[in-house]
Image 1 (cartoon, rainbow, N blue to C red):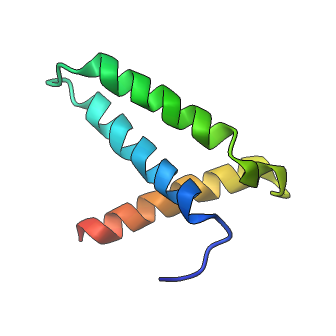
Image 2 (cartoon, rainbow, N blue to C red; image 1 turned 180 degrees about the vertical axis):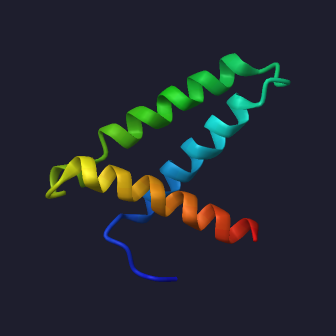
Image 3 (cartoon, rainbow, N blue to C red; image 1 turned 60 degrees about the vertical axis):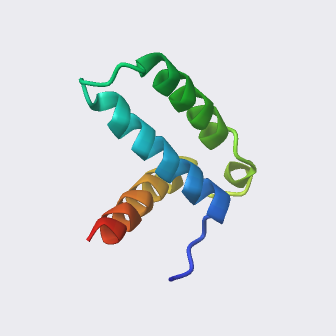
Length: 78
């Protein structure tokens, strides 16, 4: 796998956030409260991760993190 500027735990948290968001978007789900709570916990972990203290351009890095997580999820699904 290629090297990224992001720590593995941050990438895993972003992937978990994306999966939880997708599950919450499925309208047939009944456990939305648990999913919303999980989404909130994951968003807090993403927002306050220590990596952001060292990033030069935080908004650009957050966008890059989301894109990288989506790309890896799509590659695994293929």
